[in-house]
Image (tube, rainbow, N blue to C red; front, side):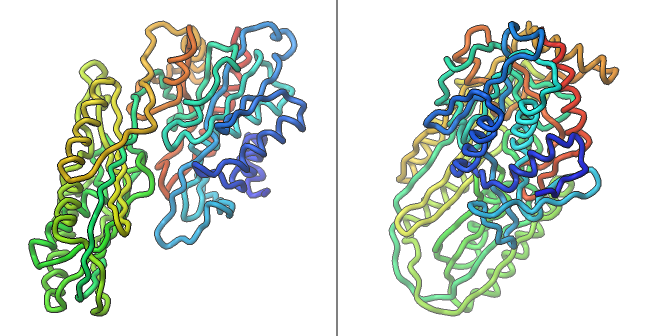
Length: 482
């Protein structure tokens, strides 16, 4: 607490400081929900919470604006928990270690949760400030957005009277997002068999990748640690006989993985050959990604000879086949919006258990049939490898509206404040707006936010000056809404 004293807007950063003390990773938001309930109760604001962990807090319009149509303010309360491999932070119990460097606010060694903690801070600061001029407010805090928009999917929209919504889940100041892709998670599970053998255990590791949000960064052709590991395992298997014990990589399906590890077993006399193959692979990959991702590291470490349970030949062949052929990256660019990714996939999570191998792939498309085609491709690949797939966390695309009264007002306010028009954009990342648009007739929304770089990674940074400007814009906008 009091780590952000002196930053402006004070009300926003004081609340953000409190939020960063509360564990609120996806699937672990009960303490955050309790905090939001207490916040409302202490200010005598009416609220409704549901079993999915969502909460709506209501505030009457200021004097003279009591009878206007409500405006919905919306953001999600959960964050992606990512940390550097050398950091021991426990996201379930420990507060974030906040650091200020120039204009940047970040958490030492971990993700910051500016996505979407800054939205929560903005909304609570608005609810807390009696000096602001605004229509009636319906502040919607959704749960578990980062693992499939689960809270928004379950939200009872009859709790809302508003038909216009300001979503605060974008990461680029001056860009008004007015449409987004739909998506889903495809889980692949394959049974594996093991045999016991004696040999030299070897650890292969890939690290140092940039990573990032798979909806935002997929267009940059960044390397995916899981896909690189698939290539490395094939290279090593070509150089010497190796048996796979396990392979792991990634934390979230919607984050491009920055690290991957594999445990293999080889004959002790082949270690030099394997080391040379790994060294060559690192040189090749660094050459391939020059100017794109400069920090890639590939390492090999050996243990001591002993007996280990490794995958049998058929299981190993199926695992390596799936990893090598699982689609990753941009599948198709939009033919209607220049520079917009239409369809993509991200092999985000890879795990190996005692009796099964599992992966999760994030699939996105602004065209429903494109998403379903890519899902079908994964199902077919999974069946070929002797496993099965399941789709979860589906969310709809949010279609761009040619006419939007809310957008027109926002553009007018922004232009008058900054002397230039904002960029109107449609993005490949998923936003909860699509779920609201699907269920609220006459729904009109725009998504905004301050500059947040490298979300979903330990390098995440929130711009302090951008936060101030977006706050000033929000305050001016609320006053102008009719």
